[in-house]
Length: 361
Image 1 (cartoon, one colour):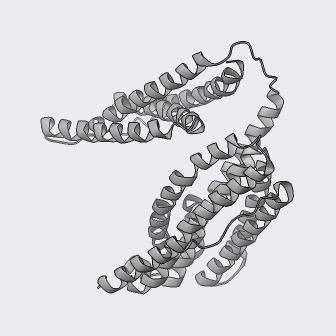
Image 2: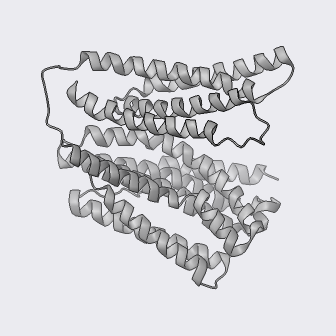
């Protein structure tokens, strides 16, 4: 119980304080000329606080391998939210911001109560006598490096890259890249949900096990991530010529494929980052990500090159960083990523891609 309260509860306290400050700022700095109801601002502040707490509680549930409870809970609450919104629409005959956000506050509150109740039951069952020594200084350093890792990981997201491309190539190119980014992010979300937090939970549970177990697990998770990447590449290589969408044609298929590859491969980096975070080496990924962003920034502003050449160089930079991360994992733990194509994934992707190619007119 002592360790649980120091690690979990202590995490929620500053997070709750920060969320309260952010939520309060919505009300304090609310522009008076905006035509929004103050009560709606309050609901948005409450929603910000609840979503923040919910995210931390869900991570705890994942670390307990309680996905079998999280998944149905999320599905049920989404269905409940959808039913509530459309029921209110049928009653009032219109959709308003309150009709959209108030049910969201209610369903988020229900999920927070459910996850908190589960963790409370776990807390009660914990041993009260064991008092493991915890170094707050070490915990603080680890959290700081983890935060830096997550922050530098966001640097290679569309939210940062697209405005830079807009300054360099104009709004038309940026709009096309944003379209590709939305597709790549949606596909990447599937990869993160499958391999993200669940993979981190596996890394955490095997941290104190033998080196053989750690290396096998790392190879297995990276292989699953690469299979998803191979499937997407096979599909878009075969069917890329079928795309005639004006938004994509503004930059060309090759540029669209390169940028999509740049965004999708960030999910491979995510596996390395979670492995480093588990073993308290997150500063490596933070350092390498910062270096790659610096090179990207210099290329965007100093190099007078075409969009395709720039994207090729960015992909090369990220692949170089990926190789460096691979070398670090091999040096410290002897862990090697498994990039072998599994026949079942390769054949399935090829068959489905060819079916789409001949059906897609």
